[in-house]
Length: 446
Image (cartoon, helix red, strand yellow):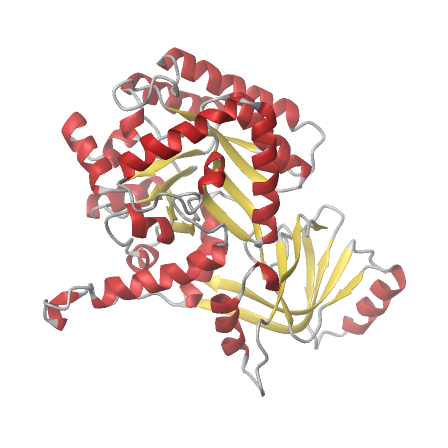
């Protein structure tokens, strides 16, 4: 008799690749003490009933109801944690105005530990409640607040990747909210790495520190060069923004005479551990550079509508084997739900496909063969995110970490429904109210 920590009995969906979603009915997902999926037993397997009986006897069987299904937990590749109080605010403003008048003043408040703890504890709980088991966070300039974010992730057993935001360019950042110098920024980044290591001691799900230049306009060349060296020294992930808007793109060309992807690459900031947010204005050369370096893209479809100035060609990127995951981009993205971003990703791709200007003839209006499906978007929210962070999660698969969510159908079916129909309805209709349980590394956290 094998003792599993938990045996989940029910139907599940998991992405096989960017175009296929696998489904198994009435299976057993057996989770070991380390929080890994040790075995998946299908309904027809010889020892199915034996395992069910053993789990019942040990009190470790969790049976899903008929309208519940098991899904991988979602991975959010782009969250500005200190912007959580501003979600849904000032989205009608240009990006630079939104930053200077709303975002920077808010982020500056996170030098206060008490305020940071209040916000971050709520944010981490909210993301978990929405089925997000892993998140890649931008913190703020001040490490006092950043360490509170790390503590909140550890306290709630959230798989967190956290970066101390670096912004030292006095021409593009306010005097009240920036690093004093490149040297100070690099020292604080290195201090943060060491302090996170201390907090991680004896933790089941340690937090990963992330090298985080805000974006090209905020950073001097000296700090970018230093951050590239720190990333190599400590073998750490890197996150930033790249080709997000006409303004950002134009800044790189004006000040450096090069595209921002080229500049970041020259400073050692594009690696197979890098995740670049948005990418709506990446050109063919940039995309090839990302592919060659193994860079992941955080697709943030809601915020891209407001600040991206274009639609990310997600289908093209997936077809070219570029790593693409999903990001909410709180607070440029107004909703913490990856489900909402799945829907917007599909809608935006349809607009890209069909075009939006009715005065242009249909044959010229759109970018044909650009529309993605719910399966494509689900893949990005799970497997794409996991690949971008080099994690063995995002799939319901033997040997993978048990980061999972149990959801139920929002509406009755009024008859029989094939599994593919159920899956599509879940992607389009699930809200926080339909997410019944969330599990990180085999532990129920909702």
